Amino acid sequence: MEIITENRIVKKNKSLATRLWKEKYLYLLLLPGLAYFIIYRYVPMLGNIIAFQDFSAFKGFLHSDWVGMKHFKKIFEDSEVIRVIWNTLYLSFLQIVFAFPFSILLSLMLNELRSEKLKRIIQSIIYLPHFLSWVVVVGIATVFLKSEGIANQLLSHVFGMQPIPFLQEPSWFMPLIVLEVIWKESGWGTIIFLAALSGVNPSLYEAAVVDGASRLRQIWHITLPAIRSTIVILLILRLGSVLDVGFEQIFLMINPFNREMGNVLDTFVYYKGIEQSDFSFATAVGLFKSFVGLILIVGANRLAKRFGEEGVF
View 1 (cartoon, rainbow, N blue to C red):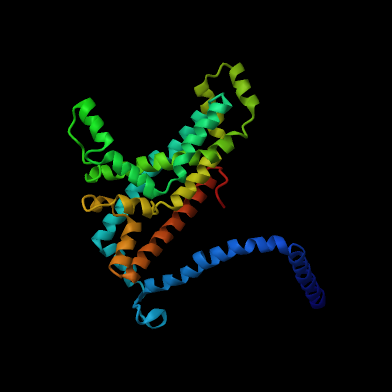
View 2: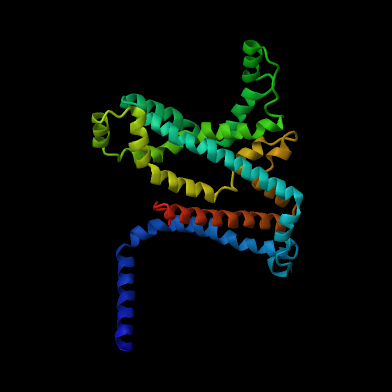
């Protein structure tokens, strides 16, 4: 039996080596992608070790003092961290409630267009903002919303209102962030939903018309159920990054007037780690954020499966 087992192992190894050699050029194409993930995704994970140390750049990883869970305990003892976590969760909640459904609504509207030429033109227009960097988007928003900008001039001349300090008023910070996300990413988000809608059997709509169903009824009973699994999968993935609301956009929009409202986990880690050189605590906060995201995505995936959906894994 041992000889037979060893022979099978040898044969499997030979067959694997044969396949690798036979398709060597295809596997070579994988190398750049694998190298990217190994160098920029996996190797940096070794740096998470400093979350359990009082890291000193002079002592290095090997000689810094080990402190165990000290920095993780500090997360729940620091009132500033609690406020930052609340800001992050609140902003993420606003994006899920308003920005996420907007892509679905936009997809449904595009799907109802009967002119393919008009649909392609509109799609091209709404896709364009996605290719702009956040630097450009925030720059455009700043020009429009500053005290002497177009928005305040319109409010002043048309409605007779006093200028509104959109960029300085803390209460306007999160609505502006959500509106910018909607404008920039909603068009790009429709790609997946429109791809799912293209697979709907047209005979279902024809049967619904024969039964006297209105357009709204067709959308409710045919279109939305057709993309339900896609919505669930994307929502699960979005919940996995609920503590990741985007560093670049937030960092560019923050100023001394709205910092208390606008400071989220991503910017907090930057201020603590880069500006204040508290590397260990900043790493602990980042690791905590990743752990919470992992729990949320696993929990949401299991919940989706309980309701009969496929889930992500």
